[in-house]
Length: 289
Image (cartoon, rainbow, N blue to C red; front, side, top):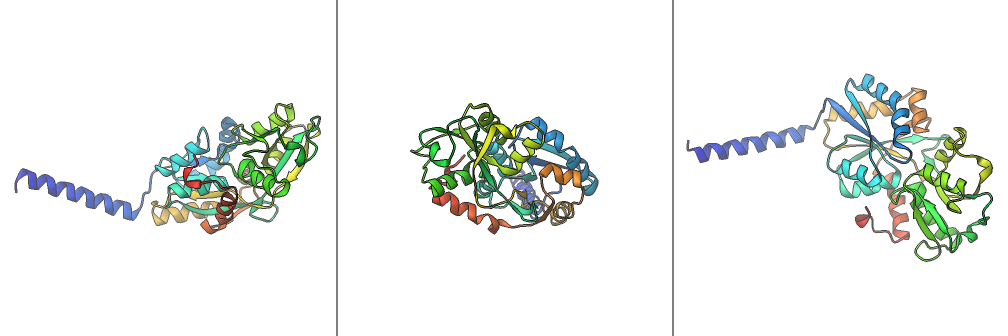
């Protein structure tokens, strides 16, 4: 056999082995689990330590908790395989799925007996925004552009309920996280804004936000809750183990870190409503960062 033939055969063999490995799926010794950066990163990582311990014990693997700098970087990390499991916001999942079609949503949190939650629109209690109509011509605070309850849902709510178009009737201000929106409204830095109601309730319970300094001016329709998503190229056995770890989760401390009572099964179709909402708002999912 000539040297060229030998090298060619070697390349073919390596490709066949790689394809076979991919077909069988990945089973890494460390699972990288990403949490949506919708609050302060240090707080999220601290609150996730019970989750880390639970998954390490249940899956018999090392768990690395990751909080990316923003929604876009989390989507890209999932797209390029830098994380195996992720806790996405509903719309950030839709964006991720558009760029990484093989990813699989498999579990969704249940709150108050339902796998849904709401976006709440709030205003500074001492300000001049007393109703939705008062938002016209003023700044309005959102979290991240890829956030469901701190951008997509309240933006659609303003358009549908008060005929307020973010392109011309008010000035959208993006502050990055839900807690940043609540703090800014409370301090009067912006007259009004929107965020996840469960997150606002949590901030009030922790006395980070004073409920006497804000007022509720709107509440969205129910939104499909945050999905747990995994890479599609994991081994079937690992997928089943990860799925079971969440669907059978009973640890109240771990569930509390997700602000849910339990996890139930879900699939991609559950999030079609968000694709429809994006269409109403004339948002091009394929071009959003």
